Image (cartoon, rainbow, N blue to C red; front, side, top):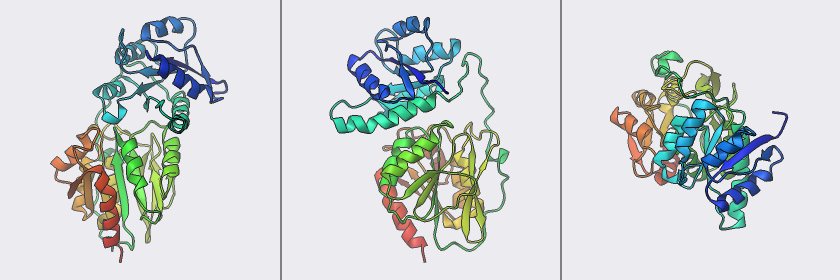
Length: 357
C-alpha cells in the first residue's frame, strides 16, 4: 500500500485503547481512526470509513469479539488482528477466532513498565501492518478445502540409507501456541547448535518479521528460508508462509527448497512435508520435534522420521497450548520422548553431542 494503513481499535478498556493508540500512532506506516469501545460503536464508525485493519478485543460486554468477527467476515471481510490477554493460556476463544477468519493475534500491551511497553511496540506495529497485506474473503460460504496428505506434494520413497552426517539436523513443527514455544526453545540453544529447519503455521506476510524477532532473541542466527539456503551450524531456517519447505541433500550438506503445491493437512507450509523430506534425505541424521498445535499436521511425518531411524520428541500435554499435533504423533507411534517445553532444549543439546563424532 502506498497510503498509510488505517487501523480501527475496538476494545472496551480505555486503558488498553490508549496504550494501543500510543503504540500504533508511533509507526508512520499506520493511520489511526478514532477507537471504538465496542462492536456497536465500531459498526457505526465503519458506515463512514472502512479501516484497512481492525484490532479487536476478544471479550467485551455488549458483544464479544468473536461474534463481531463472524458477522464482519460474512458481510465485509477485513483483516482482523485479535488482541487478548489470554493468548498465553491458549484461550478457546482465540482458537474460535482463527476459525472465524482472524489473521493473527497479539497480546494486550503490559502497562506496568516502560521497558515492557517498548518491547511490545515493534511486534504489535509489525503485526498490524503485515495484516493489511493479507487477503481475506467472506466466510459465509467458503468451501472447506480437501484434507490432503504429503503425497500431494512429495512422493513417498524409501528413507535415506546414506551414511550419517558429521552433524545432525533438527526439524521442528509447530502451530497454535508455537510462536511463544519457539521463542522459549531457541533462547535456550547455543550459538553452535547444528542446523535447524522450522515450520510454524503462519500467514504469508508474518514469517519474515517473526524470523527477525527470533533472530534478535536467539544466540544462533534465524532467518526466513529462501530457495537454495544451506542448512548450517548455528543457523535456524523458518519456512516462508504459503510455501512448503523441504530438505535436499547435496553431497554431505543440506539445502532447502520452496514448493508451491496444494495445502497438506490444510496447511502450507505443512509440517508433514518437511518431516517426510527429512526422513527421505537425512534418515537417522535427523531429529524431529513436534510442538504445540491444533490438528494433526506432522503426525504422519513424525512416524516416517522414526521409521527412518531419526530420534523424535513431542511436547507434553501440560506445557502445550493445544495438545493436538503432539498427541496425534504420539498416538500414531512416531514419538520416542514426550517432554515439557523447558526440557526440550537440553534434550536437543544432548542429542547433538551424542550424534556428533
